[in-house]
Length: 257
Image (cartoon, rainbow, N blue to C red; front, side):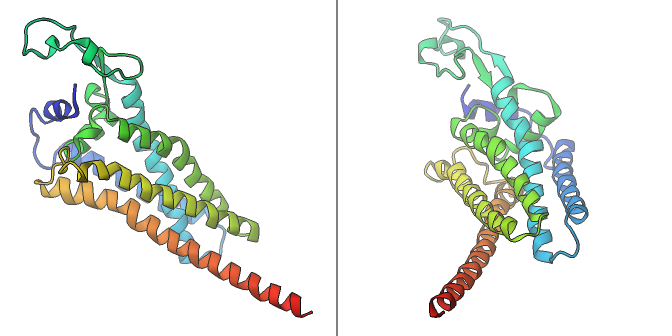
């Protein structure tokens, strides 16, 4: 099953623009944000600056999104599947395609993996998002490769940054700036690698005709992981610039002595 076929299957019976699945999906994202805000206020030692609160909230939100939402996507991509019918001679029936020409995924050529092949609630969430970007319904190797890094590395790293922000020491501050820079750079790079293939192929898998799919699902939700990591890089740069400035002053004073 190709990505286009998966998109056709998901969109076979178009729902209302705002369905129950849509509302539940948006509510899930909002609930995660509220949880991140509440926990950040409780976990950070007092007093703390507004900037520290925003940084902690963002990285906790980042961890929760990667783990609770993107984690299930990765699970469905690796473990949820349908068995494709055996090849036959009744062309142009899809089963007439030779299995020799079918791409193997995880060693199987007779399985179609992805959220489109599950009825679990988390799969329904990604089927909803796949109406905006069809690649998330089926097996897209670029998306899965990025999500492996996102779920297994970026998520835990975001949680570690929260831990560092809760320890207001000089050593923790230096580590925080370093790891925030690594994570923010990876987030922006991951966003580019997610959409660059679409930009080069006239957005063949994206629905840019529907205002909600275009501006809410694609632009807003994905834009968060560009704008905020960009701000995090700016904050980290300012902290490192200030630290190096103090180091230069100290070195100059020490040389004069």
